[in-house]
Amino acid sequence: MNSDETGGLLFGTGGVPVSAQSRSTEAGIERIAELGLGCMEVEFVQGVRMSPQVAVSVGELAARKNVVLTAHGPYFINLNAVEPQKVHMSKERILQTARTAALFGARSITFHAAFYLKSTPEETYATVKKHLQQVVNILQKEGNKVTISPEVTGKPSQFGTIEEILQLSSEIEGVLPCIDFSHWHARTGKANSYQEFLDILDQVERKLGRQALDNMHIHISGIAYGNKGEIKHLMLPDSDFQYAELLKALKERKAKGVIICESVPYLEQDALLLQQTYRELS
Image (cartoon, rainbow, N blue to C red; front, top):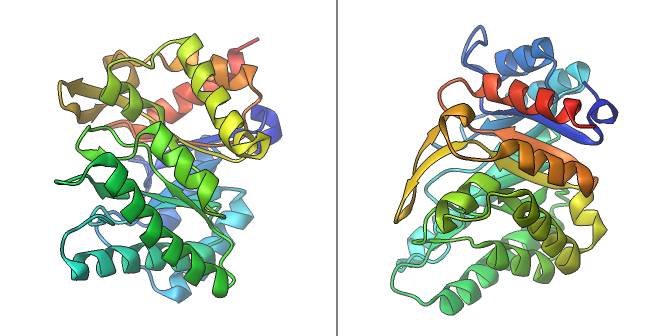
């Protein structure tokens, strides 16, 4: 599946498809190609446990199969942690993710950057920016070209509003947003209509320029949510998320990049639904 067939957008799964022959990254890439999808996010959510040798062979397989890869860093990241050791380890986890992802030719890596804890949003922003800039400086010195894409998060307790992520991206070279539209809907209870989706895309372009719309890293899934935001992931048809309206907005703004589906439990089913829905838009 090349991106020309889908107007510059590739569709795939967050992790190995359920129907893959095994839980290995390689089996996941094979299955993505068989299904006619175009990308896959390698999930390092429990830690970066992939040797350099395996990473290189994963990249070779992905290139042969024409599957674009991204990566999701560990969940145990909090750049606003009180304890210096936790901050240090958070930075190390982002670095490990980026280094391994570079070996398999990933387009970008994403992660949940921080929790507010007892800090104000402004204090948290300054702290996150400082530490993320240090991480990016190290990667740039190493010649690492992977885009760093902190994610829009689904709970009010988490750092990661659209404004915060766009501001970080405008202030740190090599950083672009991972926009999880489902998270933002769960967090705000809004942002679930064609016009609201267009407004978000226009906000991205105003803040970061057209190149940000040409290199999008997007997450979509069904999500159950309450007063405190995200509760759990669902299948899209079991949720209230207006995915067809989002796809229409993406097509209208000629967005390009990757759409990673994180629906539970059959993520490839919803990835195929998104791809099919997008192709059928006039």
